[in-house]
Image (cartoon, rainbow, N blue to C red):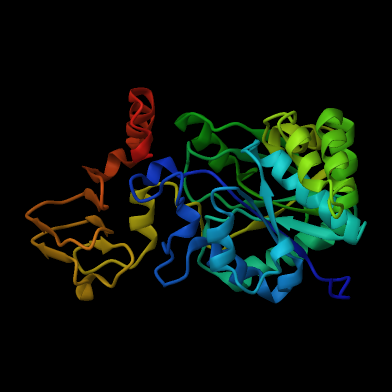
Length: 372
């Protein structure tokens, strides 16, 4: 590893299948591998590039599943092969992040690491980096830091952070008193009006020794399993130990497993961020963040006016995803999502974009797994 002890270790959990972006996003080729950024870069590539000023390829670790490891390696050729940590099966975010923390701790016991989702869009990269640098300062003080997003509206699809006062001796850092579940609209409205709540973006910065100690305090079984895996990491028995222990680890998110309990005892801080964050949760949201033509139409992956695969006449506010090589033509319609892939076509109103997940659930129930 490089000798730059001030640099950040960037950990990017790359899992999930993005069911609200079906049929573009599939279990075998999930949304983070797709170029949904308005450029040729995939969401994963854009995430790595965004963090480059604070780190270097030898300090970037991707935690991903067996099915995606080869595609991740193809997209991130600058990363050392050993920096792609392959989890045998999905165990939610805590196991993935804890594994990375334990592997980093072997290299540098007091290193500062950040955990960043592979599938978010950030509009203002410089402001994002500034917030991370503030969070790194809080992490060096021994706090578990989470990046909070200043809310722009009462949003029911996100969790919230209830903020306390400023943290002494940590510039710009605010104490997090409590993590709040996704609220009803009325509760979300009261949160935003109070000015005391931030969106929980699920991005974290901490010293690996502090995180692992907190994991041991709250989740001793998970910590013991991860410690066994880490101990064998560079040995010939690594694969055997990983296969044996991984399946016994609790399936739990890092918020539930560690952060909520840490906040309750005053160990969590946040830095409010306003850098144009978007979690690209569905096609409607994607249509809001990518460039549109004069009528509000967005063609994902192409310039609207120059896409050879799309013909639009008298249409408004469409989100069109041409992904089959066929021509997609639309006439006299508005406020629709049209997704064309080689084996499935989706058409739905933009205001029902969140419900696409229910179609995937129905396909699962029917056993039509080849579509998922």
